[in-house]
Length: 344
Image 1 (cartoon, rainbow, N blue to C red):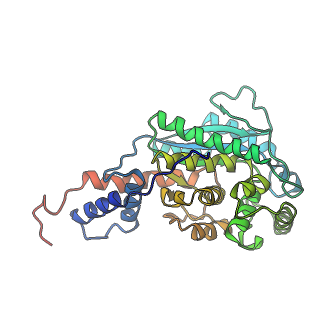
Image 2 (cartoon, helix red, strand yellow):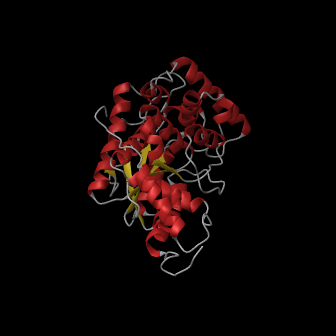
Image 3 (cartoon, one colour):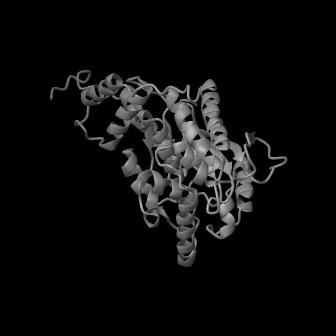
């Protein structure tokens, strides 16, 4: 981790993309946010003609001890059930990946179930679920670092496969609770402002969830100036691995698309570790989880879609993939004003 180097966002490539966009046979700026997206992608990849023919969502799975306190509408066994469902191709993220022409890679970094016989699973288990952070640290510092390394390693393995565009997905019942804790600590926000319904809990359960998160922060006293301390004390295995994927992708100039609230919390940890990561990430959508918009504003990462999603899995990121293709296709496929002999 200490040797990870993130290259700077290429202002030269970003300017070249902007100049190309302004030369095309269209009204300047008429494609709105798609143009800004193309400029961002050019700067991340350091090219004025980025291409993303090979895409992948890397979905990390892990369990959380705090789930036993009723912070989720479903039990912790659903993490393993859904992992098997994803491997069989039956999840929302599977459908969205097929729609986007992307591969789905499912990684066990911290599921309590051994997942025996789960074909196609990438097995990188660091622990069989993390501990209840409302009572004590969710992970040790070494465990958090090990999970972070899983994500970095997955980014490198995807790069070796020729993957040009990544998104970090997740599956972990109860993982909006650690995400809320991370958001509260790193963004300096009230716990109430960053805690939502998650899987669809009742208002009474939401009040209990909020109090448990506050209790976890008070007991663990995570240091906001030490993002690894925050990640270990109130985070979780899949959150750490998502952070690693973002850092690893950025180090290789592979854009990593940030999904919703949980991915936003992972990005917050990554940016706290390496501030230069901020410019190398691509936001996807505005989650219905109340903490997400607050986090993305705090991080300064723009988002492009708003469908009221709050599913997770990487679904919002996968929905952005086709728009990313559209944004970069115009750079290579549209004709210029000069080619059409049009004078402005």
